[in-house]
Image (cartoon, rainbow over all chains, first blue to last red; front, side, top):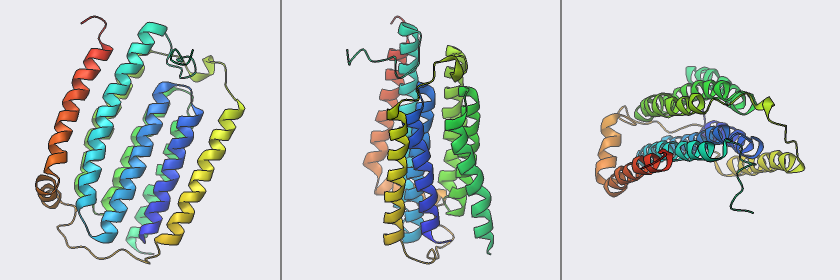
Length: 99
Length: 167
């Protein structure tokens, strides 16, 4: 398989994740879509690493996984805090900073 | 068709289907289950790219730890299905889909123009193994690696401080 096939697949997954972030109202599903986008970025790193024969891309993918885990922990803590104070995880209803 | 081509499609088609399932599913639990399946298929794609260590980490960290965290929170705040909320089919949403598709067309055009190599280069058997990645990680990327441990510490403390009711 050429590297382009993997890159097209990553582009499709990234687009699906972006559509989820823009479409969904549930903050949890928005975060899941962000995880999909991070995975697509990882796939791109690994495809280019394989194509150029350079293992540094794997190290970057490793860091992306660590950052995604940290992001999930902090993000879900924020979701719980918002749910406690407002009783909603709807991204449309949380706009205290705007008003 | 080579075995790699067949395996690519075996993993790629369910991957796209389950990724779509994440954003189509009405209930957050179904979305999370689709996401777990998507992570497993993604790990299969990583193995095809001879990224054995990253595929292993994908299953361990994503499909294991992160998804358990997601399911915990879904169970903890126990919301109903999304159809309990009034549907927001605003113009902004349709614009969002159009924007996502526009981004895809830009990405596809960029890939089609720049990545023209007909096949991957051959790599030796040690590529992507724990030894090879570990060697790069602990020499060239030592400082980012240590920064990552600090980041995880900050994330742990931050998550506890934010989610706890009373310190």
